[in-house]
Length: 258
Image 1 (cartoon, helix red, strand yellow):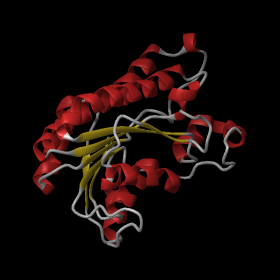
Image 2 (tube, one colour):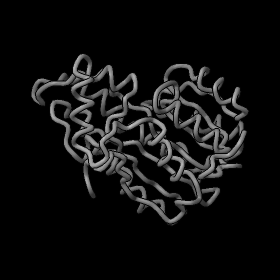
Image 3 (spheres, one colour):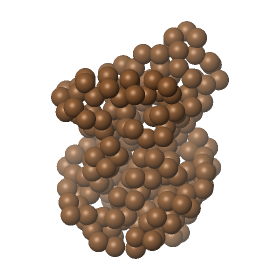
């Protein structure tokens, strides 16, 4: 499979959670295109993502995993080590988003709040715990946690999602300091809304208006597409970012300036 013109990931092994569709699938395919061997992880089957990668000449495996369950994330990491002998990168993409019910903060459903924290926060923690032992042994690795513009800008009427994605930034900063001695880099990517199935489901019949409002609030007047976001993830997996850690990379067209 030809390498990406920007980044060569030959020899690297990457795990992408939430890889069955949307952004997770895009990350997995782009990493494979750049030469990485990719473990495609999701609660549902990632066979179609693996098929896409293999048909293009890449190497991938599918692993069904509930990231909210410690034993399952440990099994995920073990399966990758068994298959390829190492873990160079983890992209923590799995999250509850599309099917969350919005509304004023004091009307949000408690069970939905707890489920959001369990997947979006605990799931990130679980996956990090699962892969770090291998990365320590290798004396290096890259963890990319996917947050959201919502965490920095403040998304009204979705406080559970906003809080969960703010916690992801906190995890990133704490782990970057803790794991730097092992040359494990930890960074966050915080995108604005990408026009995927999940975003369309989230906004429902307001999606066109939402896309317009988002676009007009940016310095770059175009809605974010999956390819533009994947480039940032490729950079953070690659050795080009070898001295970058603890950072929140806003991929939002210039909505916020940190």
